[in-house]
Image 1 (cartoon, rainbow, N blue to C red):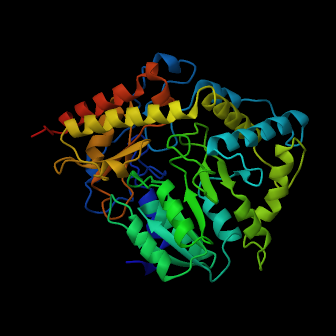
Image 2: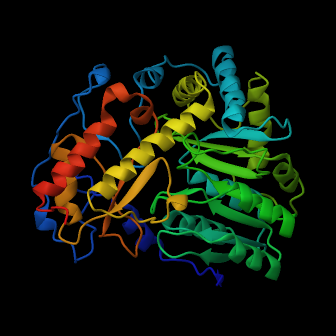
Image 3: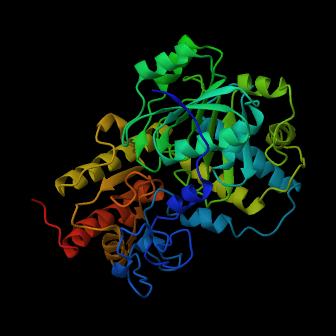
Length: 443
């Protein structure tokens, strides 16, 4: 049943996100383990850093390093990283303005929109900034929002909305699942919501939410309700048709399947959403995240005209331009198919090891990551160092109900699209060997 959102304890949520458990960084980092619950025996962690490296021949231009296979940031192509070394230039110089304009136009192709009324935004910030864009600009205090709950990140979206004064109702699914269409239809029939939010892939559980039929349902049952999507872990690896599915906003980030270093908040908003922005009764509730301030800037850059509100990062925009150019060197359909193919192979390997996924239903499983339950005899501080010794980095769990019970394997971007790197084969082999080293044998 839907329930009204009550603000969570922010420190508690921050402690959850710190549990990625990369063993190479044992003290005071986002991957730290000192914040683990008392039930985890941290004595099992290595006392010194392990710097196992990838032997991939195609990575020779990068310093030797373990292969990063967490659900973002991902491994980056050499050309993208080299774009970051672009010489310093003004954010209103003709060359940069042209690059930024082309980048915004390519984003239209990535989100699959040809509607001139839609508008892409690229701002300096993390994917989380996308939540603020929606909450501060497209929802006014006291308006109702229905949040579909699939894990840690949908909870975060709800928290952000509540901070800006939205009246949030969460329709939560069991861990590893998603709300079903009949439940959503019932909730929409009981109350008018200004917007509904869907986390396309919740990175905490690997749950993939269905979008096409869900959006069609919203437009049929509550046609005035805006449809917003958190696509941080889905854009560029999951099918997403902005126009065809009648979406009003999709927010994402640079460091996942798009394949660009972290630091850019990337989003697309429909003409309907822009009209809602322009008709606000109150000013946007943020200064830096004010879409009213950024809208003319983005429009000018896309039209190759210099403009200024706050300074963008030229180097990151160059990297994004390179990443998008690589994406469009082949059809998007081929990219999505390759991610699905690789995901199916990984999930079969997981099943062959006798392991279960957090998302048990194949229809609910993401194609850019896999959340894997560990055997009861294996603990996270055992398996992650074992994988790291083999040159592979996975992430620990962050969903509060199962945080010590599972690990997460990210398979997006160049690691999937360039088989010559051997990233996926090496990771599957490392998982098998690492579990054996931890004393696990399939029954």
